[in-house]
Length: 452
Image (cartoon, rainbow, N blue to C red; front, top):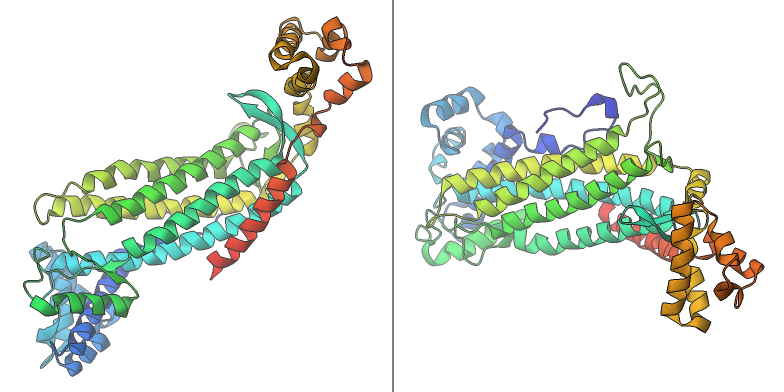
């Protein structure tokens, strides 16, 4: 996991990396300590004055960093030195109420979810920016004919806008998944040492619910420290989002190859592709996206492994989950920032698309010819007739149209003009343009929601 964004890509850091700095996590933990104290004050467990004193003191800039660092070096504990320092700054008579009835993971897990919620806001904003750019691309390319390809070979004609519609459709479902997961994911946990509420008794669930209200979270039904499925779900969803982004970047990477030349990611003036080959215009952004996508997907097995918690708690699995989340989120932010940049600046070459569409000399229209003939010959017989001409054209390098025109089985039903019309690829793009425009409208609608 890199510490810095490569400057060559000229993409602004979206801010996720800063969220996972230790100091930001500490502040999130302090925010949970405040929510804990206030929730307990509402129930008369701690004095109201104590809760407000804790709230006033729970700012990292008010704490002595040297004391905290010394405490961590001495104890090796995740949060105790921070709690000690907060208690000291709160002072008498209220400092003793800090962290009342809670255990470490109650605070750190809930606090880290505050950080994750901030990250999700950034993800949705970046997806929204990407969708806006994709909407423009889908409309621009709605009727821009190109070769549809299956198994790496020409299949039937499509349009570039249709290709973008596919990307939009998939991204919209990722937004839906992230939002559906939020109530399961963003929940407060306060069960104490083994998740039994022993330290707070009957008031424990009420305190936990109060923390949730303070933070805008839900509340765990069973606050077990062994539960990690909701945390793993988040990483699995990021893995799926990464798979989509990687697929899109790989498609742009492929279509940008010299042999295709149909699109090009933004290459700002002055960008150097190679130290020795001056002509190079490399797909740097797409390569970044593909690499980041692989890194995010690699965290999914770690998240599933981290669900294998022994008994009522196991720091081993917490460490795995924490590391997987931070790595997945940072790379997701970098990946989405680059994808938005690629979509905003993607250059299209419709002339090259049409040139490539014609590479097969009309072979890409074999299905259209077959279906037209099939109305009189029957589908299978028509398939056999067109198959013979298509294979001969490919193997022998002869024009497909000429072979069709020389076949009496074809000319008995189609004249030369009809054959020529059937071989026009721009007439056989189906509903590509309408699907592209519909996707563009849906993208713009959801992009507005992501911006709020």
